[in-house]
Length: 428
Image (cartoon, rainbow, N blue to C red; front, side, top):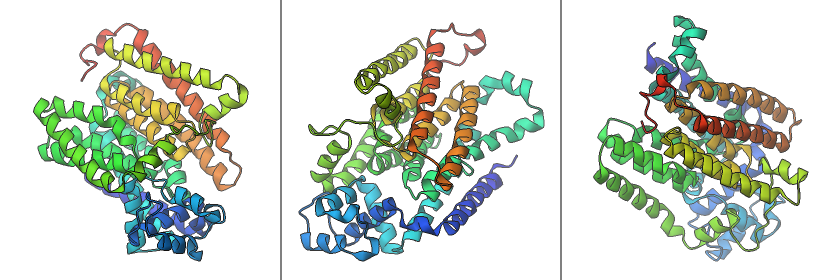
């Protein structure tokens, strides 16, 4: 199968689906999140630091009272408006400013998100076709698929995770969100860190990693994996160069917005002394909190210890490789430690988990997880489109996935190494 026509076809199909969805849902052009992104972008275009609430107060007040993006909840007070317009990291806010400067409309934001989500769809198919270790599961493919079916099976899996993914369509185009761009930066940094092209590995990857940190923050959790990939194809000197390029790039983006940015991050992570520690939105801990309101925090902290322990033990026993542990690290923070996420942010960790499992010998488990992911996504999309959905269902889904994944980690850690997999080192 020729790959380039497949990549181009994937991009245009993904883009056409998303453009059509934008055209068919004009009422969603006025989503509250979209209005917040535009307000943040307008602060940038007017030269106002979104994280310094004392910067250019007159312009801030004018923008707050602008009727074009007015939302009663967000604009109810200057404090409320300040908090919401500074809620995203600098590169995302600068990105909003660029869209606002270039186009300046609600629909343009949705179409821009759709464009980058389509690029993400292509990256997913590139990774799955070129990086997935399907040879480690060759018996599964031989026993269940014909030669012709094998040729089209992995591209189909890739398309369902990207171009046709109900969750990406729901939380990217239907609901206009930018989290797909953050996922694009994270996966790009990982992909190019494993490239045989030195410039891609030593220049492009560290810059993309820095962008992922400055855009969505979660990129920091795949940094160890990127460094590992760099070391595999280089040496410690290249790791040092990689770190310097990534660190300097990140600092150049973040430093101009300090110290207000730091205060925002402390507040958003729930580290402030007066932060309210109650699970919200689609977090799996909402269900635990409702069932055991007096003990949910004990359950959460105990599970955190168990989850970390099983990954550490599995890694040192060479049963879990660096790809699995890196995926676990991102999943741990995003979907287990944090307690107030919606599915758009949790999907970053979940989709990265599915993809990174395929890098190692767990392609079959990854495919089965994909089937569950798509099955739930279809119900979630239909439910949200018909206004019959609750974020509690998202939390239930994440709880099931977390339990399944924990059982997987546990069984991989305690079971004996199979002879047929001995050639696949836990560190390769």
